[in-house]
Amino acid sequence: KNLEILSLGRNSIKKIAGLEEVGATLKELWISYNGISTLDGLNCCTKLTTLFMSNNKVKDWSELAKLQANGDLVNVLLIGNPIYEGLTRKQARPKVLEQLPRIATLDGELLTGEDDDEEEAPAA
Image (cartoon, rainbow, N blue to C red; front, side, top):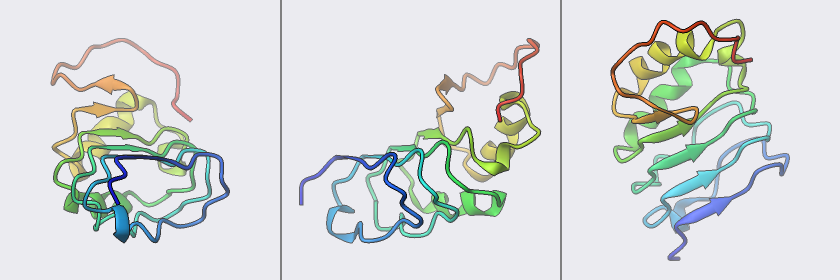
């Protein structure tokens, strides 16, 4: 009941469910390399600060809006999901921030508000 970090990467998980019992204490959820396509099931995680879910199957930008209920969420890892297909990280950043304006770290990069002009390879 006092769980703060839950690591479930590479477990063939298809949906996020059953977190109600740890929702009041869970701060970090690591669920990369699964088959998750929707972000339902996280609204009970009121203390969630970190969500690592790279290399899943999220393909709709509207799914990110569901994370707005997680007011403490500041660190998100989404790279490797279909929503990033054809985009560089730099191109994906404003689309993520549109849905999650409070995050401070995206895909391992601290968001400082400064935009550098370096070219980068596509994220996908």
